Amino acid sequence: MGRKDKAKRFAENETFKCLIQPSMEEVFHRDHPLKGHWGKEIFGNDAPIVLELGCGKGEYTIALAEKYPDRNFIGVDIKGARLWKGAKYATVNNMPNVAFLRTRIEFIDSLFSRDEVSEIWLTFSDPQPKKPNKRLTSKIFNDIYSRFLIKGGLIHLKTDSVLLYESTLEVIAENGYELLESDNDIYGSGRADGDGLLQIKTFYESQFLAKGMKITYLKYRLP
Image 1 (cartoon, helix red, strand yellow):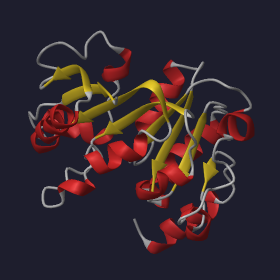
Image 2: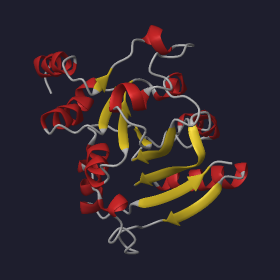
Image 3: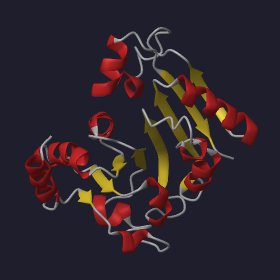
Image 4: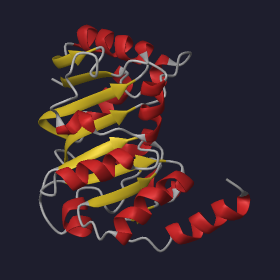
């Protein structure tokens, strides 16, 4: 993508009501005004809120929102050019239960309050092979999630990375998290066939499958 295309997308991003783009000053060591108020201010209801962290172009966020119109979905990513696609689709198709948030995930608890989020999806996150503490399933990040997940809130991990899958299993065991489901090949086992949550395929997921790579899935709950 050229600079002109990126500039055009960034400009159009400013027009999307569903795309929230906080400044660094609004989230660095302080609470954003939307914290605790997403249901009322953004969605106009008190339906459960589901986050997709590292959502890329927002394909999973959009697909989940289409399947479950009685829930609210927020895709989070730092790349504005990627978020443009999801925000554009949600705007053109008038999807009231979709929002996108452009911010670093390290600042996520500056934007969500206690018991404000019911579930988290991590889809094809960077496995960070040399920086385990930066993995979105590390204890550091799980501690952050615990500050705004409801009691019994779920965390889903869908990944092609064996490293991320296995290291997450270790984190779950070491910290006493409740492992609810584990599958190291959801298409080979048939697990994805009848599950609307797992049937969704992102662009990259389709590429991974075409290469014969296995897609894994974990579902767990924090204490």
